[in-house]
Length: 167
Image 1 (tube, one colour):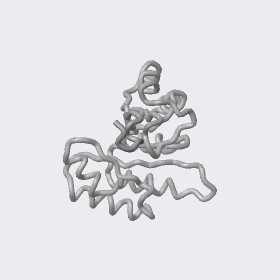
Image 2 (cartoon, one colour; image 1 turned 180 degrees about the horizontal axis):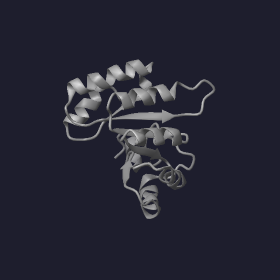
Image 3 (cartoon, helix red, strand yellow; image 1 turned 90 degrees about the vertical axis):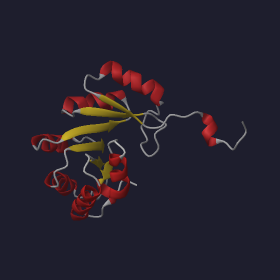
């Protein structure tokens, strides 16, 4: 979903879309996807780099370099401790938003020097947290503790969306 067609449409509609770096099989392909997105919009867009602990990790440093070399100015990191990535992005003038699912993670990312936090409640599909805190509780809890800007992200719904038309 986080490919040039959707991201450029989001940007053209006035919002900030993110290409997902790891949907591209190589850093070179990511560079091509960023260029393709630039061909589809003149508006700003970002790239998401999700860092996950794994036995055979992708070449995160090479993906990071591709983002920097492509001139992208906004990156969303997610996952495990982005410290080295944050430092390198900031060294190149890239604004960093870190996606968090708990206040303790948001505070840790703030100490790492990110520019903003994207706080995801339990309803946000694809971003499981360890604490399963709903957004309407998590967002104000984070806002009370975090001093940098916060983006409230994820989904907001009631249980009716999950059941057949019983209402």
